[in-house]
Image (cartoon, rainbow, N blue to C red; front, side, top):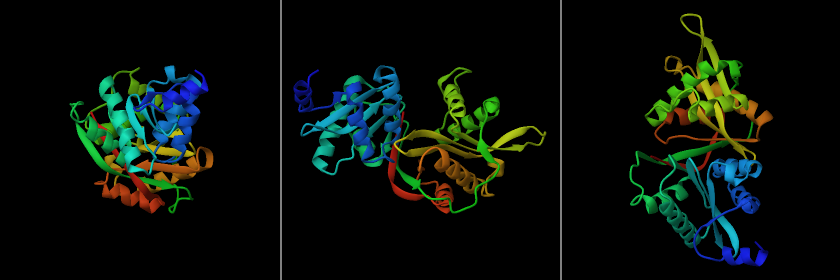
Length: 299
C-alpha cells in the first residue's frame, strides 16, 4: 500500500484494522499514556516480534486529521487507548471502536484500561453485548518511580520453575477470590500456561514459609502481568488468609518494587478496586501514588 493510499484510508471515518506497518505509530499513541496503556503496549510490542497475525488478537486504530490518535487491542481482553484531550474526538473514536466491536461480536473476557475509555466504550456496547457479570468503574491506578518507603521483605524472591505446583494453587486462590470463579482448566490450560510462563520469565514473586506439616507454602505472591514502555504493572497480589494483618503485603510489595525497578522497568504500576481500602493503604505506605483510574467490565 502506497503512502497516498494509506493516507486516504486514514481519513475515512470509523476504526481501521491496523497492520504490522502501523505498529510503530500505535506505540507512539500508547507512549502518550504509558501507565494507562501498558496492557495494550505489551501486546503491541509482542506483535512486533510475532507479527499481529500471531499475537492473539487484532489492533484497531482511529485516525483524525490523517494521524493515528487512538488504538484498541481486541484480544482475550479488550483494551482501548484514547489519549486525546478533545472530547469530540474521544467520542468519535469510542463510537468507531464500539461499531467494530459490535460487528465482530464479543470475544473477550473483559474490557479493561483507563476508566473514561473503558466506561465510554461499554456504554456504547451494553445493549449489544449481554452477559456482563460485573462492572468495576473506579479502580485507582497507582505508580511508584522511587525507592519504596518501607523496608523490603528479604524473603520475597523470584519463584522457581520447580515451584510451579506450589505457586499455581496460590494464583488460583487469588483469582477466585478476586473474580469469583476458578480459572483452572487443566494441566495445559491457558491459565496454567500463563502462570508457568510468568515463572519462566522471572516475573513471579513469592514468599515461602513452612506449613504446619513442615512443607513449604506460598504466603505472599505477586506477578508482573504486563511489562512495556518503561512500565511494569503488578498484578495478582495475594497474601495467604492466615497471614493477613501482619504487613506482609507492604514489605512484600516493597521487595517487588525494589527488584523490578532495579532490573525490569523504572516505573512500577498497579490498579486496585476502590473498595479495597486495606490494599490502597498498604500500597500508599509503600510509596505508590494515584495517577488516574482504571475500570474493568467482566463477562
